Length: 172
Image 1 (tube, rainbow, N blue to C red):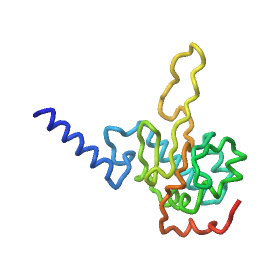
Image 2 (image 1 turned 120 degrees about the horizontal axis):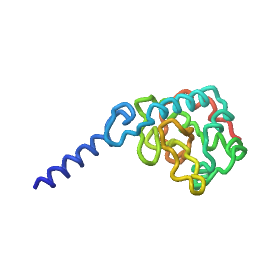
Image 3 (image 1 turned 45 degrees about the vertical axis):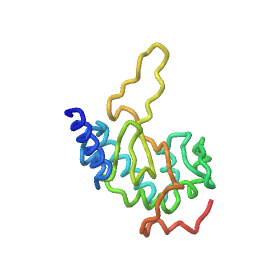
Image 4 (image 1 turned 45 degrees about the horizontal axis):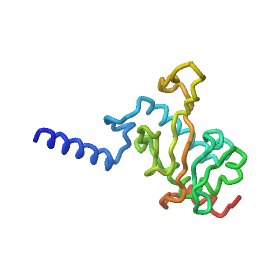
């Protein structure tokens, strides 16, 4: 009986966490990562690059290969050049809107990385593979750069966002 009560309490706390209005970087919970502050700062840099319409700055915040969708098919964008040539197809008006309308309180972090807008954009610390015989890498929060690892543009929901429509007629 005690185990059943514990299990129900755990399930309830997970449900509350999943449906809370704030991300767990602000409303901390058991899965909150220690590098949340860096994740929030990264979101601000990404927002500024998108707001100022600077694809080259966005490209510098990407880890290649980037997981995304092009033409309705899941794909990997393998280089900065490929990313820049497909920028408007990857960072669609809906994705740009999702990024620009996100607040620091929307950032969620877990073992898979950080995300906003129901997983529209994911980013994480990029830890290099350890050199042979050097042991595991140092995972001190803030030691490694954060980079976008996935853009779920096929699933990005349309939001009322004036910034998102400013480039909708453009294609590259």
